[in-house]
Amino acid sequence: MKVALYLHFPFCLQKCRYCSFNSLPLSQIVSHEERMGLTDRYLNALQKEISFYADLYADHKWELSSIYCGGGTPTVLNADSISQVLSCCSSHFHWSADIEITVEANPGTVTLEKLKDFKKAGVNRLSLGAQSFHPEELKLLGRTHQAGEIVESYEAARDAGFDNINLDLIYGLPGQSLASWSDTLKEALRLSPEHLSVYGLSLEASTPLAQDIEEGKLEPSSEDLQIAMWEKTAKSMAAAGYVRYEISNYAQPGRECRHNITYWENRPYLGVGAGAHGYLERLRYADESDLQIYMNRVEGGEFPRVFEERQSDLDERVYTIIMGLRLTKGLSRKCFAERFGRLFEDFYGKELSLLVGEGLMGVSEDAIFLTEGGRLLANYVLSHFV
Ligand code: SF4
Image (cartoon, rainbow, N blue to C red):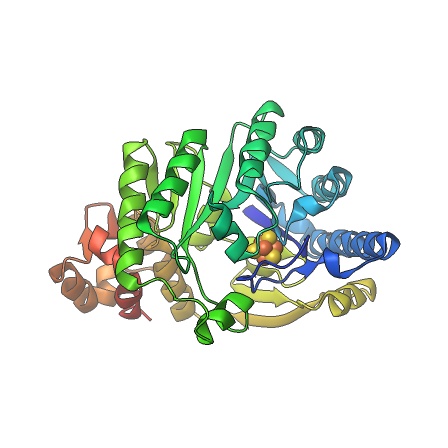
């Protein structure tokens, strides 16, 4: 069975002002020894958790189709740390011949040497957190890098031999104009990455950025402006030859992120590390996100899970629809019928007719999908299937 593997590296240089991810700013730990002690201990725990899965599923003959090293910022660690974890994975699991191995990196945390070492360790896809090319916006977001460092890191990655690079961008920032967003898009496209992930800013309660908005220090971006940015993005990407294959993701043909497609197609993936989520044999689970508790539990020989939920047929179906409709190609009618024993229309005929009538969904011989208008109103459309 093909399985994707997500590895969580919960360390960053410092906390960005909009971030609610499970990550520890290493700048909070003053002593170098303490920092090394903590990251080494975490890496050992991560490898131990990988070995728990290898033992538990020893007779399952898994084949890893992708590995995604996310965070946090995996590249605040040295290249040896990532190689060590990857070789632990290869010693425990069989890898597909065409395995996709992504490492998330932030500009300024990679050098040419480090990138070459990642390549040597088997990493073949780099995802750079650019977010914006505008100095004021980077400052507003609390990013540690300058716009120039995005280009430097990107070019270093090309020099190291990476031929599959993603850039992450965020729109809808307080004070961001359509013109400044267009500049960011232009700069990103000028680099010609194989993939672009473009998300609207999500304001997470209790982050400094959300608090500034709540206290009236910053004006949030209006909905109309965000729609204009979304439309501008779609047009610029299409003009540059990118295919929108998911609501927020664009790729040059054939360069879609295979790891993320596993999530959108609701196929199995193993999540390892503090706060990681996984989905195996109809079981959804989440690992403990507190770093110390996570490490203590793994060191004590325990699976560090804090949440487990066995998926019912209904859960499985709803999740498959919600995730699958994010993809531009939509849900394959054939795969849906094979998986759930009946046609999509047999379950949701009424809802489908209504949404097709409203111009928000489309039906072809092979698939059921969201129209452009449906993508804009995705939450409304999906609410009909929950
Ligand atoms: S780099 Fe990413 S994970 Fe780290 S603090 Fe910033 S947004 Fe959060």
